[in-house]
Image 1 (cartoon, rainbow, N blue to C red):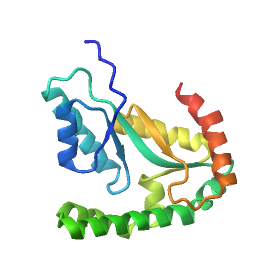
Image 2: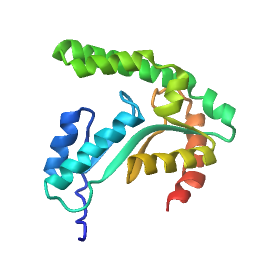
Image 3: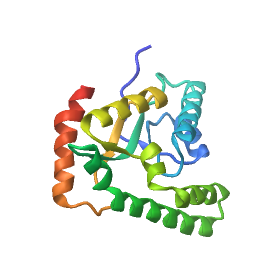
Image 4: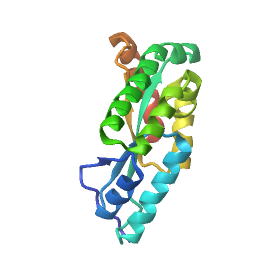
Length: 184
């Protein structure tokens, strides 16, 4: 079967019900690693693809991963430069989700709030971002492509908004000149 081109729109999914609804509608997806880790996301993408097939759509359903990325010439810089910014980012995500869950009473959101609030920097580095040298990021993206079956990524270059313009531009140069060519 030849897969039809996807419409230019993607829908973000974070809850189990959304993965199924989007798949039934035959809409491509983008996902993130904020509230849930890699294993939970892998299972959710599996539900999306199973529902996609059961709905009779062609192909497997396209999935893009939205992920904070920071590239530097040394591992030390890649880990230390964005630390304050990404910690603030996840703290803010937990507070926003906590506020939303108080208003809606959703139990799943309360679990995600607890998970986000408990994340250490090492936890974030392990399964929620890709920070490193070009080689390290290329390896991480290949791993995620294998584990999740993603078709592409959407890069967040300054997720917490606290990096300097110079840091963002230096990271972008590495991303565009060294990382992106590895995926063409």
